[in-house]
Image 1: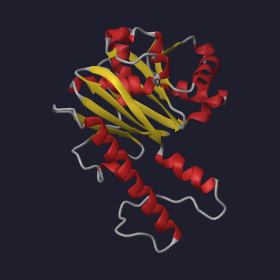
Image 2 (image 1 turned 90 degrees about the horizontal axis):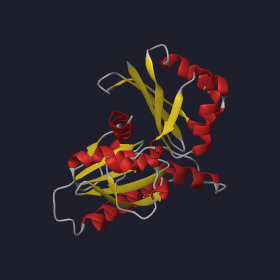
Image 3 (image 1 turned 120 degrees about the vertical axis):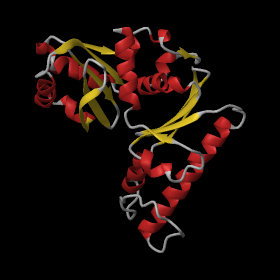
Image 4 (image 1 turned 180 degrees about the vertical axis):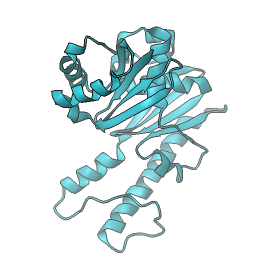
Length: 248
């Protein structure tokens, strides 16, 4: 028996096939907007359904309209699409915030998986850059900062002469041309932002903790973070898988 889980993000979506040990055997990553297309959605699920899968499919989603569209597009397959917040997540982690509906599902499953370290800070370089704190195995809250790629895109689209560019991690001096100047601004700016937020969060945290990086720029910024970090690009899917295993 196989299982299907997924993570629907603002920019990209990942759908995975898990084996009976709940380890990833197949992973599909694509533009989230593509799931508004019925034929594309059916094509993806037909590939996954070549295996004998359980009819319950579990998603973490921060785009309700896409989850709704997926349900509609694959209705003929008679699968049961479930979003993680429909389950009793309190059985897996205590969430110490006032309104869980305001907390993204991706951040919840990241914290459920990170909980195994007891004390951790999870930094996700997604559409937004998020910092989530698990202390004594309890989710305590977090910080949301502008996403790197989105900030670059917005700056380029909002100006007449500033181009879109790719970040380079070797920035020894200020720029002598536009692209190098932009690169310096983003590298040094996010270096300061990330390290400052880490310091603010951990200032009075007198215990061992793990800093986990995930998302598109995780490996890139690992090199400029002053504390030891671990990169885990599967933490979100692992979290969804853990919810599936424990609650379905």
